[in-house]
Length: 150
Image 1: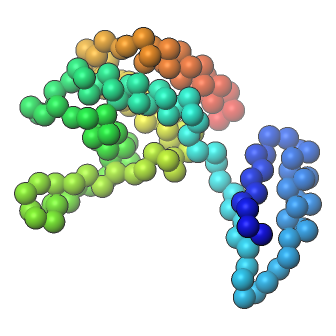
Image 2: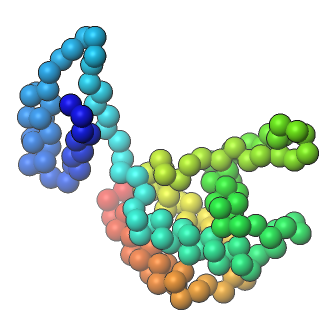
């Protein structure tokens, strides 16, 4: 089997199709297939919201005399959210935050990350760009939908 098969469990019909598919798979103790079930990861809308928010923060906030890039702010927020640690870099001249990739975050984790970044920006007096405002409306709608199923 060369391709990965993905089923989004959104209905009983899809669940039955998945069960049938699994039953049709061959078993092989020397070269077994792997079945993984997980929450969906972040959405494209969440990703767009994150970068709009991080860009606004990076353009307007100076943190401990440093101007950080959107990517650097992403590391700060993921490390804060996940309680990550810092370690000295290899030459001992600075520290590295051991954050988490946002690519593997569930939608709920990513929603928490966005909420943290937005709250921080609001505390720092960030004036949100039109792009960030538009994405915030989408984010608020999504967060409302998520709370209905959580």
